[in-house]
Length: 76
Image 1 (cartoon, rainbow, N blue to C red):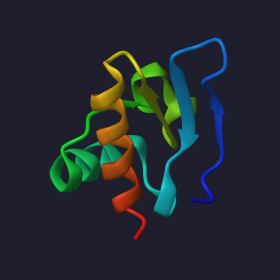
Image 2: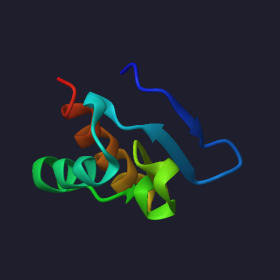
Image 3: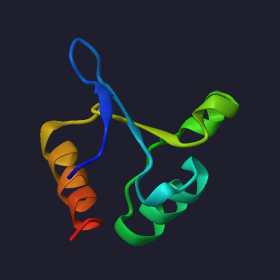
């Protein structure tokens, strides 16, 4: 999808740059309102996190897979 990310290896967290040049809290609202997926805005970790977002796989396989299918739908 062309989004820079890090993590996911030996960690349940994926950090990525917010797409569309959005701030993390705005991207949180977009995900919640458009695809009903919740993550953690990087702004909650301080000013340097403003343009980053964190997702986690702390759920079962089926729910995580569904969330990622919804996430992909934002970019279609």
